[in-house]
Image (cartoon, rainbow, N blue to C red; front, side, top):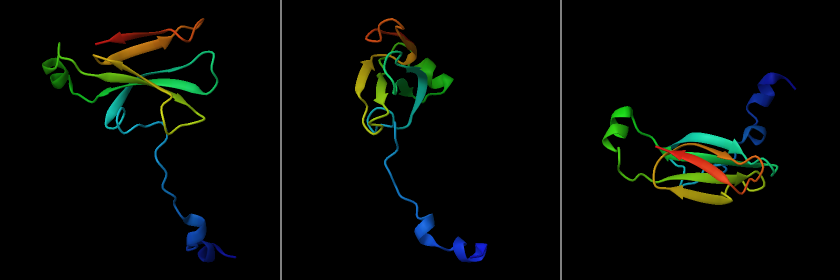
Length: 110
């Protein structure tokens, strides 16, 4: 078969719609990822910090006010639902798992 015959074949080119992996409507939609870290002793587990999109001027106006942000812990076995959600009262700028005990997580807030 020539290229012209296979280009219009819709059965091969069909696009299937799936829910976006590693996004959550409540916690990460329209937000930015400010930090990411792999869980050191668990294969396929990653955590991401999500916070509000804001310009510098907006950040200055919100200074001192409570702005909830979240750390979402994802497992590659279930990329649709976060395994755990940790809430913070301020934007999380950075976080890290303890390399010796991944049950401990240290985060820096702004």
